[in-house]
Amino acid sequence: MNQKYFFSAVLFITISFSVSAQSKKDIKKYKIKSVTVTVTDQEKEKTKKDSYKKFDANGNVLEDVEYNKDGSLKKKESYKYNKNNEITEEVIYDTKGIIKTKTVTEYNAENPKSEIVYGSSGEVIEKTSFIYNAMGEKTQELTKDAKGKTVKKSVYTYDKNGLKAERKTYDATGLLISTKKYTYEY
Image (cartoon, rainbow, N blue to C red; front, top):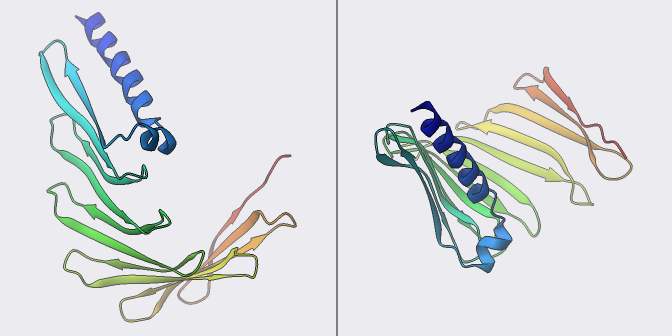
């Protein structure tokens, strides 16, 4: 009894890992439209969906769904892309399949220019704008609430190789709330 369950669990983990490990290149090469992962409980002889992913012709994820052990919705997200395969819209749903948030990203020639997060009723929750230096490195993120009031600001610095060295995040009053440092080994 336990041996059957153990074998099923190991098989499921192996299959899940190999399916989710498919590269975007392979998905595009083999023209994979979707992947559904199911789990079969050998003891109860029941098969349930574990996850589902839908792809476009470029291998981008259009829909990503995960299910709980009882088959109910655990997580659902959907995406839209521009001609450069950059995410332009991300929608996150609640466990009932109703839109929780929608994030719309606008791009300039090369980088994200702004992100607007909308709530379930379509109201603006927050807007984040991005600033880049001449080398295309993000130097600032400024997040404002629906009324235009600054919520937080992040400032990025880079090392001599152009690698991200540090991100400092400040609250609405300008108080430093966190510092994230990046260390590289060569």
